[in-house]
Image 1: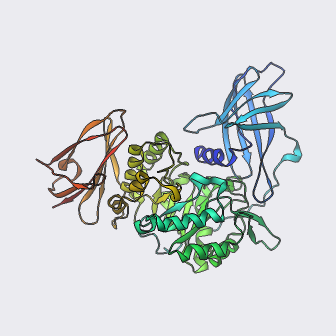
Image 2 (image 1 turned 45 degrees about the vertical axis):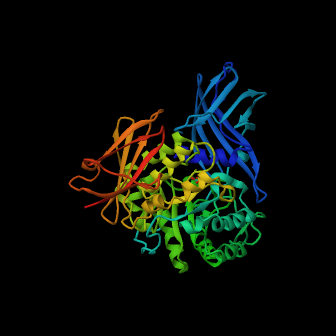
Image 3 (image 1 turned 30 degrees about the horizontal axis):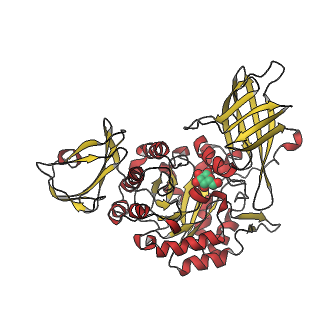
Length: 503
Ligand code: GAL
C-alpha cells in the first residue's frame, strides 16, 4: 500500500511538502520524536496541502506515520547527528524522499530536490474530525455488461500528474484520433486526480480553474468518437488532497453521468482515514450502486493498490477492473515488480472484470525500447487494461510501433479473457496465454543483462498439440517450428512474443 501512496505522493508533492528518513547524529538534547507539520503546495482549488508527521526516534532509527489530507503513510528513517533521511515504511523502492537536518527546532531539507520544512505541530494543526458513515450491508451489484475485453485508452496521471487541464485533454483527444491510437482500440480519455475545485453548501463539487466547463469538455471528447473518464475517492480527499466523494457518492455519480462521463477511477486514498481495509468491499459497493443508479454505462475502475484481496470481490461491487499493485514508475524494476505481483490474481480475470497492474509507461523515456516492448507484451499477455500514460501528441515512431502493435493488442483483447501466468527457467521467463481460437500467445522475457538464446517447445506451452502456424508479434513475421520447437535470440530485457495456432 505504501508504495502506491508514496508513488502518488512523489508525483503530487514533488513541488513541496512532506515525508522524511533521518541520517544525522542528533545530540541527546535533540530528538525528532514528536508531531511535525509540513505545509505543502497550494492546490488548484486555492487550498493548501498539509501533512502531519508523527515521528519516534530510537537511537538512530526513526519510525512514524504521515497523516496527509489524502493519505496515511507509514514511514521509517535514520538519523545521524542532526541529519535525517525519511522513506516510506514498506516502499519497494526504498529511496529517501525527504533528506534534511534538524535546524533551530525545525526539520529543514529537500523533498525530491524541492524545499521541505516542518515545524512542531500544535493542537490547532489537527485535521477536522470526520463523521463516520457506516458502509452499506453487502449485496451483489448487478453486472453492468461493460469491459468485455480489457479497457483501452489514455490517462493523464503518469505524465502530467497535477498539470492536467482542459486544453491537455482536448489536444490529447485530437491526437488519439490523428495518431491512429483510436483506430488501434484506445477509446477512453481519462482525467485523473486534480480536476476538483471546492464543494459548495449544496454539496455540489465544482471543478477548479483548470477545467472551466466539464460538460463542454466531455462533449468535445465524445465528438471525436472517444469516451471520457474521471477520478474520485471514497474518502473525504483524493490522494492529491482535493475534495472527494465521501458522503456524496450518489450526488457525485449523478453529476458525472450528467456530464457524460463513461469511466470512473475510484481511488482509496483518504478512505484509510475513515475505514479499515476490511471495509473495502462495502465502501466500493456504495459507489458501484451509485453509478448503476445513474442509468449511464460507466466503467468502474477500483484503485486500491491490491489491498483486501480485491480480485475475490471486485465483480460483486460492480467493478470492471481493480488495481493489483502499487503505482507503477517508468523504470524496469517497478514495471517488473508490478507484473510479478499480478501473478496470484490470474484465476480472477475474465470478460467484464480485469486485474490492473497499473497504467502504461511506454514512451515516457526511462526504459529502453526492448523494455517497453516487454512492458507492452506482459500487459497484453496478462489481459491488463491498456491505458497509455505518455504524450500521445509527440510520440516517436518506436513508441507508436509499440503502443499500436495490433497483433499484440489482439492478444490483450482476446475474447477468452485469460490472464497468462509465468514459468521461470533461470533468467528466461515464459508466459502462456490461451486464446479464444484454441491457440496460445507466448512471451519469453529475458531478465538478464545480456542477449540470450531461447527455445519455445510446443510440449511445454501446449502439451499434446501440434503447431499449424506461428508468428513473431514484434517482427510481424511468420516463424517455423521444427521438431516441435522454435529458437531465437532475445535481447536483454526484451521479449520474444509468439502467437501459435494449434491443432
Ligand atoms: C494514486 C493512484 C495513482 C493516481 C494518484 C492520484 O493513489 O494510484 O494512479 O491516481 O493516486 O493522486
